[in-house]
Structure formats: structure tokens, C-alpha cells
Length: 211
Image (cartoon, rainbow, N blue to C red; front, side):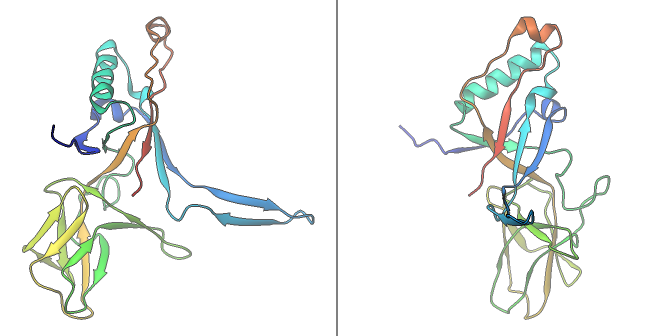
């Protein structure tokens, strides 16, 4: 029997995802001193997204769509793609990605492989988020501002391979759309149809998969 990959390269139904709630989560340890002062320590180096797809379920047809998707993923077992409408591109909302949106590396004359990433903030403590699930066909690459044509992108990993190594000191930039690698955060789908028809929203927790 063939080995089934632990991740399915399929996107959760966008019509339901667009009505969901959620966003980034961090884990910070706060210690209160005897003086009343605080000491704070980041337990996670990277943020993790959490969502609740239940807020996007609006009809019985949506319920059936989610159940079918849940069953094929075997609950928590297999990961899948999720489109976060609030944050799904290298460019600001309402604008199209361009090849100079995000800096992804600096040339050294030998390296041809670069990983996509998105930077948040800039002045105090910018955060570089790895982008592992770019949307196929959406990636644009530039070297020192000049658009590049000869490159390959692995949409399953976010790794970009250039045909030639950029010269030392050259700035490699990228623009792209992306999905979030996620899984269901439950092995039990509980939907009370009586409550649903009365307006009660089911909870369908979804959590980002980190490498």
C-alpha cells in the first residue's frame, strides 16, 4: 500500500475560511517580582496561527462541505492549506505582489537556493516569518530591483532555486501570495443541527503546523 503523505496540498474551502476568526498567537512567560516589577521571556521564537472555521459556516451545505473535508483529512492526521484573508500576500492589503516586496537573501556569488519569508515591523524588533506554502504561479523574484525570469519555486516548501548565483552583495527580493500550513485541532466534529438552525455557531478549531 503506498505511503500517504502527512500533508495534503489542498486548500480548505475558501468560502468558509473567509468568514472565520483567528490570527497569530505567541507564548510569553511573565514572572512578577516581589517588587511588583516584571520579567518577560518569549517561549516561542515564532508565532503560530490559530483559527476557528465555525464562524464561516452559514448553511447546511457548508456543514456537509466541512464534514467531507474533515473526514478526508482523518481529523488531526493530515495537514492542509488555509487561506488567511487578513494576511495572504507579501504586499499590503488591496495591492498586488511585486518582485521587490520582501528581501529574502543577499548574494555571495555561490548560493542559488533561497527560502521565502515575510518581514513584519522594522524599527524595533522586526519578525521574519518563514513562508512554506506559496501559491503556485504567484512568486516573483528580482535581483537588485531587476525582475528575474530564470528561477524555480517548490510550492510545497517555499524554496526558490535560481538558475545562476547572484553576485556578492546583490539583494534578492520576492513577491508572492501564500497559504498557511494547518491541521484540524480536534479529532471530533460536534455539530448540533438544532442549535445551528437556531443561530449557534459550531466550533471548528484549526492550528498552524510548524516544522
